[in-house]
Length: 429
Image 1 (tube, rainbow, N blue to C red):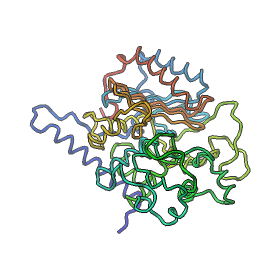
Image 2 (image 1 turned 90 degrees about the vertical axis):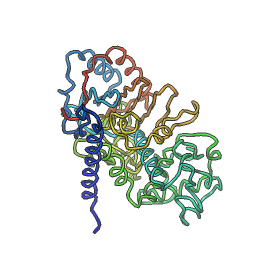
Image 3 (image 1 turned 180 degrees about the vertical axis):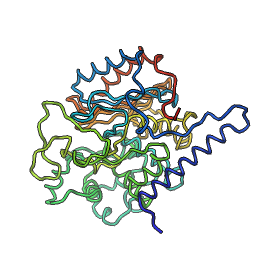
Image 4 (image 1 turned 180 degrees about the horizontal axis):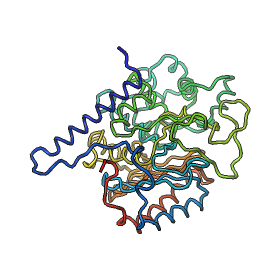
C-alpha cells in the first residue's frame, strides 16, 4: 500500500525518536553514570521569549534592538548554540504587523537552503546512490534525458559533476539573467503563458553556452542548486521536499521546515510577514501578469527555487540542524564524520565549500542568505559557538548586510558569551 506524505512523515518522526532513544541507551552502557542523552523536544512548541529573558542579558537585548533600528529591521530571530547546546533563542521586534517575534516563528532563509541541499547530497553519497564526481548532464549523466540532451548548446555541459554544482563551478553565467530570478523575461522570450517548470528552466539553461570549463573556476549559481534538487528527486524517486524532510530534517529534529510560498496568503502556520526597505519600489510580478507587487510577495518565484533558496524554518531548529552536521558528539550527527570533513574542508579563498559559503582552516564556517524580505546568517565560530540570525526585512545592502551582522556577533560575543545560562534548550528539562 502506498503511504501518503503525512503517513511517511509520521513514520520518519517515529524512527528518528527510536534512533535517538537507542543512542541514549547505548551511551550509558559500561558506565556507572546514568545516561545524559535526552530526546530533542519540538523547539517550536517549547521555546518562548521568556525562556531567554535574563536580566544579565538586558544589554545584549539593547544592542540587538539598536542594530535593528539602524537597519530598519521589522523583526529578527536570533539563536546561539555552543558545543551542540542551545543556550539562547529569542525573537525581537515584530513577526507581523501586530504579532511580536518569537523563537518559534518560521522565516524564509534564502540561500541558507543550499546548506540543507548539500546535506541531502552527502546522504545520497553515503548510501551509494551517487558520488561527487558523477556526471550530471548529457548521455550517461544523472539527469540524462533526451529532451535535455537535444538542447545542450555546449559540449562542456557533459563535464559538470555533482561537486561542481555544490562548489558553484559548473560554468554557468549570469549573462542573460539568472534563470532562477528571470522568470518573467524567460516567459516573454519564449512566449509562454505559464510560469516555467524546473524542467523548462533546465532546458533554457542547457541551451546557453557555459562561461568557463566546469571545475576550473567558480561563479555563484542558484541554478546549480536547482539542478542538485533535481538530482535528489531523480535518484530518490521522491519530491525534493519529501526527501529532505524525511531523510535530513526530521531525523535532525527540524519538524517545522517547509518549502516557502510566494505570497502572504500562502504563508505557513507560524510564518512571519516579510518587509522590504521603505524606498523599495513595487516590482513586476514574476508570472508576467503585468501587476505591480511588493518585491517580497510575487517579485520572484521563491517556491520554484527549491534547494537553492526556498526553505522556511525557525532559528533554533536551524541551529539544531547545524549541530547535526558539525561532527561534535553532544547532538548525534545525521551524516558521517567523513561527510562532515568533506563539507568543511578548506582549499583556498577562491573555492566554495560544500553547502557552506566558506569554511576557514581555523574552524570558522559561514552560510548567508538574502533576497527581498529576508536576511539570514549562520556563523559557526572556532570555539564551537554558532550564531543563527534571520530577519523578516531586507535592506539596501542586500548580501552586504551579513558583514555588519557578523560585526554585531563579534561585539556581542566579546561582552556576553560568558553570561549565557549553562543549559541546553534542545532537550526537555
